[in-house]
View 1 (tube, rainbow, N blue to C red):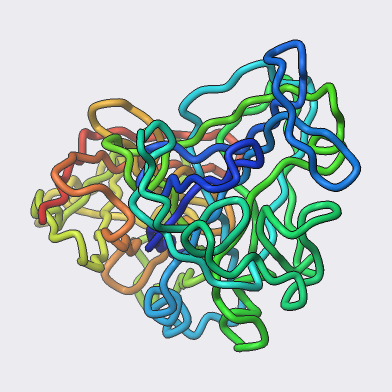
View 2: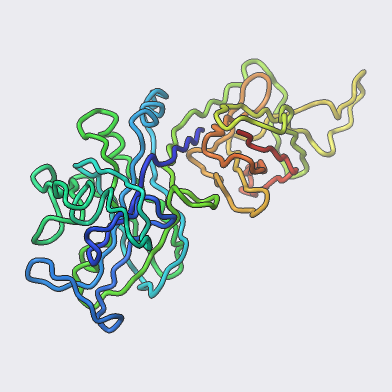
Amino acid sequence: MAVYKIFPSKDASIYSRYPGINAGRDEILEISVKNNTSYDGATVNVGSTSFDDIRRSLINFTTNDLNTLKSFNSSSFNANLRLYLANAENLSQDYIIEAYPLTQDYTMGTGKFNDNPNPLNGVCWTSPGPTGSTPWDKTTGTESYLYTSGGGVWNQTYKATQSFNYIDNKDININITSTVDKWFSGSLSNYGVILKHSSSIELNTGSFMVLNYFSMDTHTIYPPCLEFKWNDFSYNTGSISNGTITNDNFIINVTNNPGEFNQNTKYSFKIKAKDKFPVRQFTTSSVYLNWKYLPTSSYWAIQDYKTSEMIVDFDTNYTKISADNTGNYFTVYMNGLQPERSYKLLVKTILNNSEEIVVDNDNIFKIIR
């Protein structure tokens, strides 16, 4: 199985209450609604309705990076847009985040929300370019903001959503496979994605909900990414008859971990599994040298060594461990990992009795520039 990540080429937040400012280089992306006038007394009139403050985010990935994904020629893939929560305020028990493909390109600009003066040199609520330039063009999309131009234009046909309840992790992990598929086919131009609250939140004059996520300009390990997964699983042992691990008394070794990788590396880790207590045999060589295969229901994962956060989690569809006549293996694309950090490989095996075994042998490696 394969997991490949690409990072944004540009992103920005736009604000109905501050329709001309640019926040293209801000460390935070906002998906917020502050329509509750008891919070502050200001309002913004949009058409015939008064609103206080609606905030949306735009995010884009280069066509070259997308073409790299396309070159894998996978007939079946999942593409998930991932953003990591920085902070939140006044969340509802249940809410929905929506993602749509933009139908107009935008200029990122170099502003930040708190800049004074703001450079006004990139995308804002009223325009995809600097303040005073051509407004968002509703004729190129199937939707724009309420009654007047502003807030982005997008195609409603390829709407993607993620629902959150009270106990859910609040990071965004939203499936936009249908949009990416149309970018690949050329039937949609790649102008990026807009993220927003549902209309039931945005059009409620009493709403107040704040969600802030790390942007591509963050100084943390949590920039947004497009995570692309596809099936490259293969389990073909040929004529090898070494057998398969059948109980929890086994050990595994990653036999080819050099310890450091360039961030653009594609690498296949080799695994050998052995019985911890092999059956006694009268042979001319040690039975402790005999290796076996892991079961087909075995999976890999990658954990950040310092924070213990799962960077690539176990996935029964997309991180299965393959096998050939030399043993088990799995392939990692290092581009989705932050440089100058260390990571740990984990292996999970599900035995025939449904017992799950997670093996952590401190197989650590570092990504270098």
